[in-house]
Image (cartoon, rainbow, N blue to C red; front, side, top):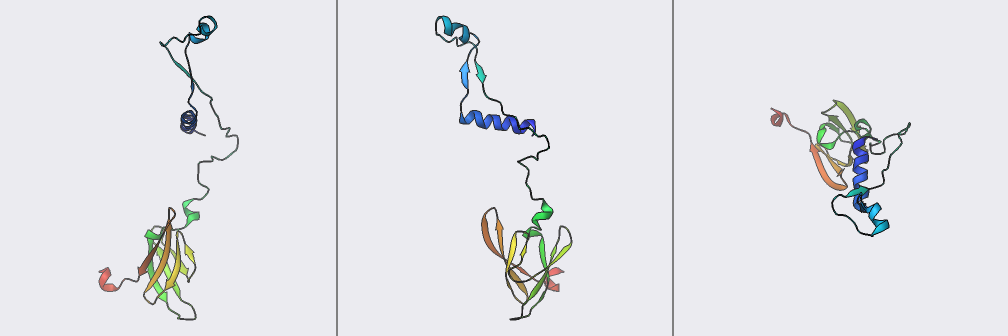
Length: 146
C-alpha cells in the first residue's frame, strides 16, 4: 500500500473520529492544576498500516481492460446476415484493437448486449455506471463514408 493511500485512510478515520487534542504542558498541568495551556496543540491519532507481504492491493480493480471487453463507443457494425426466424448474425469491429466480434441476439460485447438484429442495424442495451440506455448501430452506406 502506498504512503498516499495510508495518508488518505488516516484522514478518513480522523474525520470520522476527531483526534484527541492535548498540549505538551497538559500532562504536567493535569496532575497539578487540571488546566490546559492553549499555546501548543498536539494531535494524537491512531495509525493504520496495511501489511503488503504478498497480498494484492485491495484498491486495484480485478478486471483489466482486456477482460472487460470493448467499449460500445469503439464498436462499428461491419455486416449483418439476416436470417429472419432462423437467427441473424452481426459482425462488429472494435476500432481500438481491430478485433472482430460475431454476435447474435442476447450476446454481450463489453458493456453492451444485443437486443435486436435488423437487416441494416443492430439495437443494443448499453450499461455504463449503473445507467442503461438503448443504442443502435447502423451499417454505413458508401455515400455516407465518402
